[in-house]
Length: 296
Image (cartoon, rainbow, N blue to C red; front, side, top):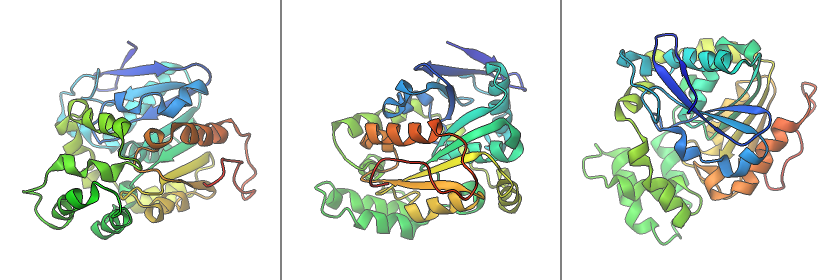
């Protein structure tokens, strides 16, 4: 198990899957151990995945100062990992809440990021959280599915009430494009993979300065792919596109039939699209997107 020390002395772990050029991967949750990422739908066949267990999660230590769970405070952890790996520049992927951390890292260390992949990222850091209306609209598009009638009242109670009577497990199908045995197993693992203290403090509003972040990202010169899921409610494709719009020249794609975990819904599609982006040569700004699978 590879370990390294964060600047504050917290012992952090990362997991390595696959071979080839490294891709540093920041998990979401927030506060979920990197195990839920698996091999990202087979992406490990194309890249050596460096999966970070964020502080307090998985095999990483609990920090002495709980305030260091804040997203902006963890930027230093990513930089320490880069130094530990001996990389001059990173290819970096952030999923969900990990995308907020990736955005802050790219803003603070733009010269250290060659390629940036942002997967189903709610733009919290840009001051644009997913709204109840967006989540409910995305959910209504799935009312034909057999689990919908039992699950939808709990979604409404979560989004419009105080959450007191919510069966949280009933919400799981809304996060997947296909509610099958694979998705059920993936969702069931979340409870044991998530650290509540890390989750509760990650999105502290004090961690974000949206105007400053937008100004920094507007100057970012690395290549960027923003990937949304067609059926994801948080973010729906519309707010996900605002993440791409924060960059001067980002590719934006929507994975057909996917939810919040697109590699679970269709691993080959996700791996092929992501690998095509990572393997493409440097593009001339404004030259249009690199080739990718049909339907994106």
